[in-house]
Length: 238
Image (cartoon, rainbow, N blue to C red; front, side, top):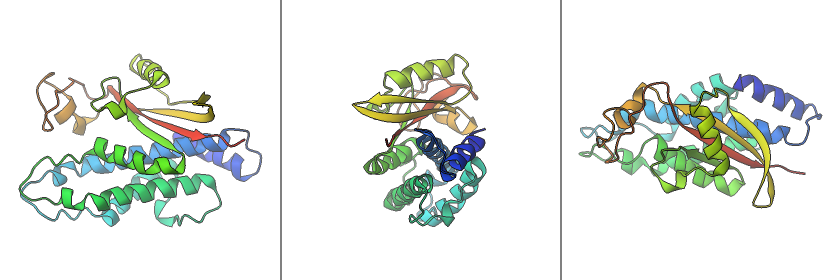
């Protein structure tokens, strides 16, 4: 459904008949899907990253790119390796920027990833996503990982996010989009639920209250439950 939503909004944009906020909605959806795909890549490589017996893990920006290319192409129909940053479409420019930011984060973390003799290195999907969001903010796009049970104050939900997280936990299955004025600026707001899957349980599952590898107390989540959301804001051009 998300892939279809991106396609329809982008088709309207490129045909010249997009309504106000439609192109920003397409950008927000694609950015959220990219970060979700990227987090999956990090999660799938977490055991490798945490392997204290190895030095060079081989998890380079190029290796990351090959893996996220497959996941994001399936999610959004966009091939990140084909983007140059010189495209006319704002949606493709936005994806180029978040992809470039993600590769930069992986590059900057190489010493951290490849440290031998140390298990948990404080480089996981949550840390990766936060660093990507910090780099992307310079473009005017805000992407944030948030949860009602947040571990980092930077991930604390605002009023809109808190309300949507409660709806997701109550059974709302679909992502949500709306236009809103935030700090005087009209924004396209999109929030995508993030579910707990098997790989999350070692840190976020049972037994509740037990310290995980990072020293935080496990929340007792079950597979399939809502862990949080990816929240995106894109300024709407008048």
